[in-house]
Image 1 (cartoon, rainbow, N blue to C red):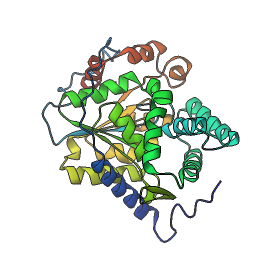
Image 2 (image 1 turned 30 degrees about the vertical axis):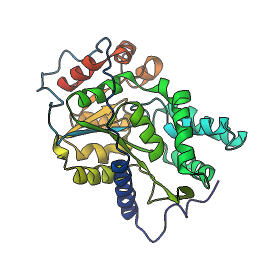
Image 3 (image 1 turned 45 degrees about the vertical axis):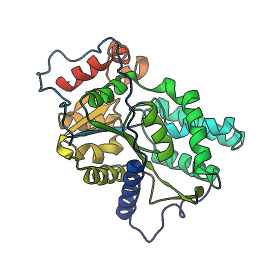
Image 4 (image 1 turned 60 degrees about the vertical axis):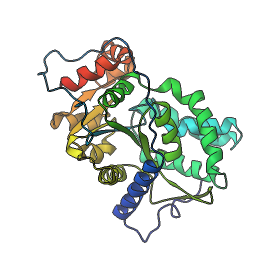
Length: 318
């Protein structure tokens, strides 16, 4: 495993690296923004609290200064995108079995714990950078399309996808915001019919990966910087925007917008969201739902939910 020093130059402070990573992600997202429309999801509505007061309709149709920002791992998709990507690269003999075992263990831990461990995530990103070094960006993009079909398409949470669709149906732009490589995030966004993606930017020269990052991984405060930079460039009013995440690491991003949502929240985010009366929804089922205090039936209903469930979520608070 390569040392981390060359990934984050010592001459820059943590805040400066976050800003650099955020600005790089925003620039990359604007260059790769997609305009395709996705099909409207349908299905049975999920369950919402009967004791919550009614709220004005949201998202507001036709508000072109509003947008939605979705975390990816465990919010839109079960598990972590970078681990699924690693599995696909192993299948194509980009690295050895011992490295696949490391990816597999990290993915298993992530799914059981349901939270991001910074050391695990950084270890995975470090592995991925060393693996793609010297490969062409176009090659990895092409492979990424195949990997999405093989390992990611069936792991999209229907309930969260319906929430994104509700924003699209209202005429708003929808962006993924993730620590995953921006190329991978862009593929997922396009496949889901979203506007685009903010992701970690790996340096490339003449279309070939150097094995270094621009700034730092798009994680924690860097996500907030990316959203802030994109909002400024796109003329968005953050007070009218929404953000969705499962992780307390994304509290800086959630706190930027006027409509923060905790989706499949970890314990710290659940506590924080409840203290501030943020909206919550959990799409996990069975033992995992029980561990965080959500009835299994509610999780099953949410997984079956479509756009009607998304609208119900926005109109009611838990």
